[in-house]
Image (tube, rainbow, N blue to C red; front, side, top):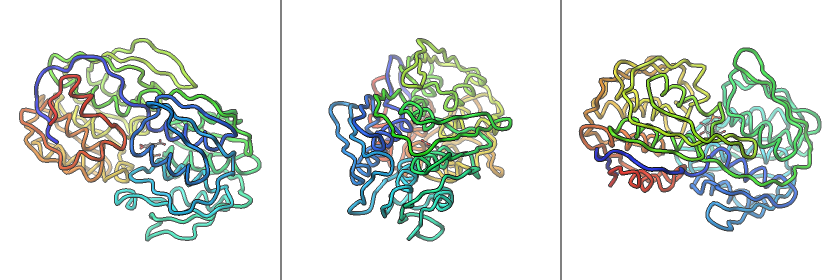
Length: 436
Ligand code: S3P
């Protein structure tokens, strides 16, 4: 797919539902007793794979309309042994959260995924689950997929300090903790997205979150609750909204509104950062639904300046660095993004892939240790072919780059965009973007 500079971006859109919330709504629905109804579910490949896995584990998961789904749950620890391996495709979230949900069930299940997911570290989840009594009966080299788990018959509650700030590790432990008697506690030194905690509370679990140290949290969950089915309205995904948002900032004359974007503060680091760079982003119509806040954002073309992005902000914008790096390339001056170690273990090595995406388009970039520096000159030459490495966010970031660069930007493979943002090209075209 190729993106070219063209008209200003104008109009109003709602990007698809939040990926994190969509996975969790399906999983908690499957662990509740009775019927959960979900509206606005992200119907991207990652989430559809989670739906299929839950079905294979015995929950009834049905699509009743566009974005409308219902889940008939089997109750905590109620999963049945699946007939074959569970295939999570490209999705680390689906796979790691499902590992947690299965860990406290007396069944054996095999977890697998595509070539990208098979490269990603799973020990970070397997280690705490083993402490809870789950057995890893098979894993590929380095604790990678395919992994077979034998769930604990009598899971034990643990107190666990996550070695890296990761909502996926935290969520896997909490989901396993649902099946354990007593209190499971997770301590994180940097707060990661808290959708699992918020949704567990929405479904009636006794879950508490307290501050821990300067930036951290201590989350405690009382095990063996009966989860009550609930309605979940999924807000628009801020990590998807990030792409049209940055495109509108970069393409002269643009003025767009993004509706219903989730404003959970543990997800809005990009907006904070863009505003510090001089972006005109205005929040309108703030409202609350199902424990999560959302707002419409009006975004207008803006001149940006380079800044320093502090490492503590990384968890609140971990998926947004590729698109922030694109914004930084068009800014005046250098933007330094610090503490990006976790980017190396995403759908691709995103630190390397982001730097390469910019380099092939004539941008001056440096990686030193875990930091990325982008030397913005106010314009980007473009004209490059970007290798996406099975990574949806590299593909979308590169295409946004092409909408504002002097020359067209091409990506080698746009197929993975469907994992998180089906309809991306149409949404961008609807705003006036030239993607072909
Ligand atoms: C997610 C957590 C983050 C993020 C991913 C979604 C989640 O991963 O990168 O896209 O829904 O919990 P980590 O937990 O590995 O940081």
